[in-house]
Length: 171
Image (tube, rainbow, N blue to C red; front, side, top):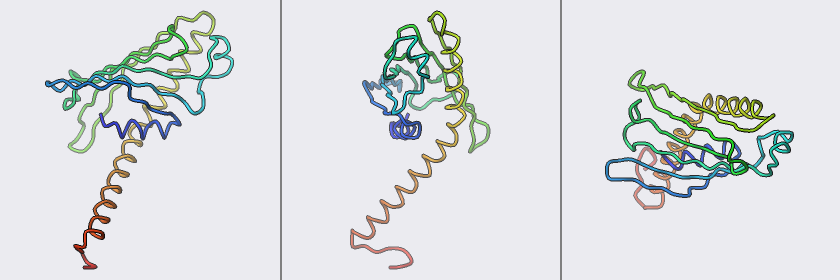
């Protein structure tokens, strides 16, 4: 997974992404640990008060194959907030080709909340935020790809100008 995309997603979602560990084996398996903090805490104050939580940070461990994205090689992850060991989110994502230029992302997410009284509210909140984030993923992917294309074009243009080797219609 492109770390630039992770940083892009964090920026779009008003988060700060921090890579903690990254290991890649000879067979293409990637293991990563990361931490995400939020510029604005998405947890309502009443729930934060009930679980005695301040700022929210989420640690995630993920494993995937560098070059295989199908059902048999999907990305698997476990996330947990720093404020409570009683909340975990486990997930599995994979890609299904639809056409030569389109794919469908499948996400299976399990939310576990072991908090009396506020557990159901926390589960619904995590589900709602997860669904919203996954719904935005295709648009974010296109926007990121367009941004990378623009950056590549600008870089090539700067090279042509500053290398003293004019090319193209203005040469």
